[in-house]
Amino acid sequence: MVRKLKLFKKVLCALLAAVFLLPLLSACSGNGGGKEQETAEYTDVIGIDTSENPQIPAADYNGYNFTFIHQTGIAYNVKYIMSEGESEDTLLSAVYRRNTAVEEKYNVKIAEYTTTDIVSEVRAQVMSGTPAFDVILASARNQATLAREHLLYNLLSIDRFDMTKSYWDANAMKELKFGDKLFFTNCDVNSMEIAFMIYFNKQLIEDYQLTSPYEYIKTGEWTVDNFGKLVKAISQDMDNSGTWTETDRYGAIYEHDNGRLLLYGCGVRATTNDSTGYPELTLMSDKTVDAWEKIKEVYSDPTTYFDITSATNVDAHGFTHRWNYLRYLFTQDLYLFHIQADGALSQFADMEHEFGIVPIPKYDASQERYYACYPPLDNLLSLPSTIEDVDRTGRILEDMNYYSSVIYVPVWFDTILQRKYTRDDESEECLKLTKASRVYDIGLYFDFGGLRTKILDVDVKTSNISTSFAKLKKAIQADINATYEKMMSN
Image 1 (cartoon, rainbow, N blue to C red):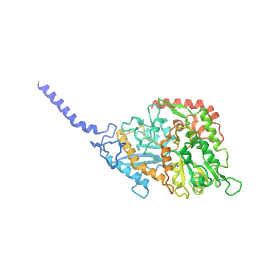
Image 2: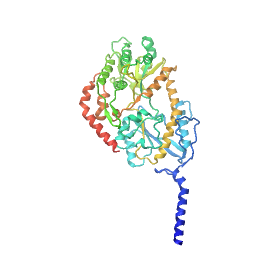
Image 3: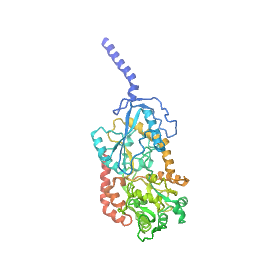
Image 4: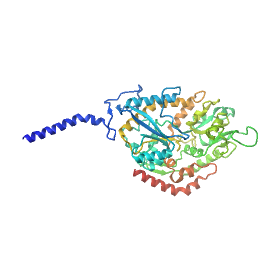
């Protein structure tokens, strides 16, 4: 009887201990952190509340450095993660306010880790098992390389992420999946580029008495054919030398990726995910061939465009590279059109005459929507496959996304729209239209069998897309199958 009583007392003590420990245990992470103390209820820390608010309770992470790794020394540097404080720069001030909200809510510090070779750095650190970063910002094609090597975490397995929210890009989530896995995506934290769009010089439209692209937008006739008509309407040998150089007047600046960008605007894709998340090869069709020929026709007269890719002898005139020099010449009324992402806007701030912004044109007037291809060189977001505390990462990144959407993104859009002397309603609507029209293509980023480098990113003026595709089709399909199988085993 005594022995039974002692046993009963031991069991009772154990049960009482479990009851008292349960709240503490539930507040600790099961993924290696285990030191934070969660607040019982959600508290608004920014004074802005919307239906998008994930309302995640605060937690104390004891001054942890929540770190973003990104690459420096490239054209698309990350300038939207860190800020030292409020300043005259409205974008950096917004970054500071967003970061402060996250830091105060979770007792963390937002930090960055920079490298000149992000693939090698992420590879080395993830394979060591203790990466010194929490989030990876890398170009789409570099993200594809990291995913192939099983170095990225499946974002769809993070319970704290709610990708039905608008601060996660719905198109990216759908189009970048492999099966039921998503290794990199886009979101409002990654406010780097909207997508490629077309800038046009309003003064040249007026001087040459041309139909404005805005009018074509209104009537639903902003098509490749009408874009081509406008390009060919401007051709002037400015010094009457008989020799065409970058300082003459043209309908457009031509860069090597313009053919691919216009092709995607026609609704053509290299690959398209089926219902299971398998990237089907969908590049070639009669429409593809016809669209490619339409684009080739746009650039059929070399006196109506300047090919900056081929013009390797053009001096940069003190600019970072010759592409920036050509953008300067755009501001000097020498070119009607320039296809580029919004990262080029800073170079147009001092332009004397106004410019407009429109999406990439459609295949024809019957096409229901516009398509803006997200470029392989622009950043997307991922997480390393080795994560110390999954719940901590999920909480902080989800909230940082939300705070970006209500603090940073509105200022970002306003800043973009103020890069000219007057603000027009058409540009604002076209920017929103372009952002909503973004498409992502696994085939581009993984470059299956040379799909991008040997077929799409070539000189559209001289290439035969059918012949190029026929030569590589088997290699492309084999690479798709092998990569899909590898991703599914991740």
